[in-house]
Image (cartoon, rainbow, N blue to C red; front, top):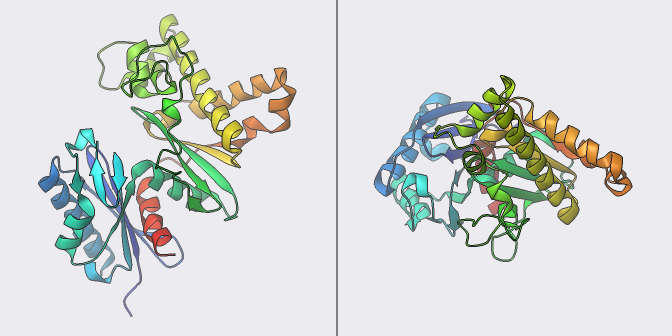
Length: 304
């Protein structure tokens, strides 16, 4: 009997991860390929990842029970826009993959996919709610309420990076001023601590650990601003948990420092203490492919 696998693919700016999920919900196989840049190369690298995954788990590509894709940018009915790092704007990825594979696939934003992946791993109660706070070059959250993605009326749910917190702050690429993303993201760090590095946040944490006073101050500001993002999510949606994800979240002690900041705020606010703010923040195991696993869940959700 042919094994039944649900498949999720996470297309990133440099690499594409594909995972096969077995009937028990465990990862049965995983592959990684280089992401193609531009429409033709991207479709080809995605198909390559799926073909290599099928070989890895010993089935034909057509035998996968479902295929879901997570990709940066705006996704509407399978069409991907504003995926700048992939040189994609207006690609009907769903239709292109349907034609290449001879079967339908489900497409969603990578942060939404990662939110479902985190929920799948960490939650045992499907009635619970979770916000996946993606700390990368930008800042956004994926929201899972009652086990299902919540996108909002026009797909803007979770775009907390564009909540203005300082009306006199710097201009954000979105056109507003003082957005949270300008002070709680990798791009925000690059602005607050300009070194020209390709990995500004990693270098910032290393400099702070070595005693650089300016780096220590900027790192402290980053922690406070990420804690503010957590507080915003809890106070507006009252989710059971907020999971920190994305590249910035993996850096030294960030999770514990954010918890400590929230706990400090609780000591001066009986209200924050009463809602257990600091206890709601969690991380993911190192290396867990949240977006790829969640992409498989996207396909399941669409078929419910």
